[in-house]
Amino acid sequence: MKHSFWNIGVGFGILFIYSLFGSCQVSLFRCWVRWLLGTAFVGKEVVMLNMDETPLQHDYATVRGNVAQSARTQLETVGSFFQRTRRADTRGHTTLCGLICNNPDLQQYLPQVLLPNSKKRPLSRAERAAYQLLPAPIETWVGTSGWVTARIMCGLITRYRQVIRALRPGALIVLVLDSAAQHVAREVLQHAARLQVYIILVPGQLTWLLQPLDTRVYSSLKRLLAEEHRKVRAASEDGILPANSWIPALGNAVMELLVGKTWSHTFGAMGLCLSRDSLAKSILTYYPSHVPEGMRPLTGAEVDTMIGRHRVNLTGLFFTGPARLAPLALAPPSSAPMGRLLFGFAGRVAASRRRFAALGSAGVIDAAAPSALVEPPSDADAPVASASSASVLVAVPSAGIYMNTRSRSSV
Image 1 (cartoon, one colour):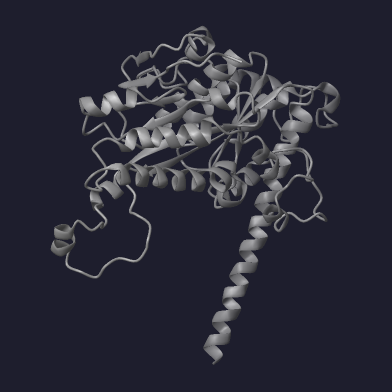
Image 2 (cartoon, rainbow, N blue to C red):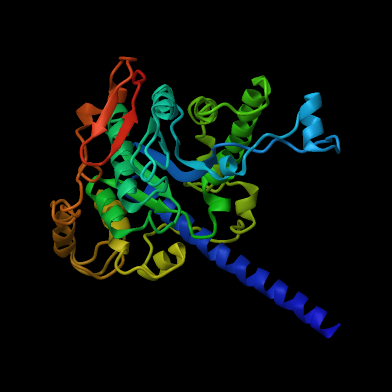
């Protein structure tokens, strides 16, 4: 009995500590968001994007139900329906890099990037043909392992900037990411700073609470994709999903949920706004009304708390660029002469400018690597700016990547 009470006490203690840590991370997240929107970017047009990757299965098992308890051979003889799904198909996946936006007018133009595992096994002609038939703005990048790496992440940031600049040339771009290692790699953050894409990190272990794609989109997308598979299987004479038919099914699900719907309302609910009035009830559990709201850039230790691990000298990559855009009247107060302090941590503006000027040089962004994913393409080449509906395959030199960019007319 003593051990039972002890175990219960330890369990409640762990939950209490986790709740306190979660409340701390939510407060830091809100402080970061409020500083960007209320100080650094006040009076400016802001396009806020949320990107996250998720694996999508090539086949889904059918829903549970009542079945006849007979041998498989007997069921085949009488033609009864039973599940015809291979385990290899349910384990195979293609990565979707989904993207949603706080501007409902832009959602239909945002690139939804597919990363099939085609590095070790190149796509067959049938698979390539199926991918090329997917409608815009779905894009397929091949020659990858099917996982998002730091190099792929640099390419995604370049692509997102290209599209948004073609549609909203004067807008500031804010990209909301979780704290996965490939998102906070130094080369990724340097590339984003170079392109003036400003990053907000969702705290580690709290994507289930604060990331719009995780909380509102992906569960619905996977249910819809499984339903699409069931429809295709039901239309088949033998109940088997035809080869490569999962590709158009995936395209239908993405077009219906990510392209055909707007998700701007989820940003305010997940805390990506100035006021707490629109916050979801689940967030208010960790961020009650009596907690004072901050509005300042975070320190290095606080960034480590957000990421969940220690990373050296990342603070400037997140806050120096936005701090330069803040109006002088809203700049953080300092008793030192103007130019001595930037935004609350010691350092000279001149040194910071020299450091970030170095980010624009070719040597900082690994010039030895293939440059197709790290060098920003010209905004004039953005296919969304064209009113043409012709299907175009854009080859990216030395990267092994192509994109199905059947263009949509610009807004």
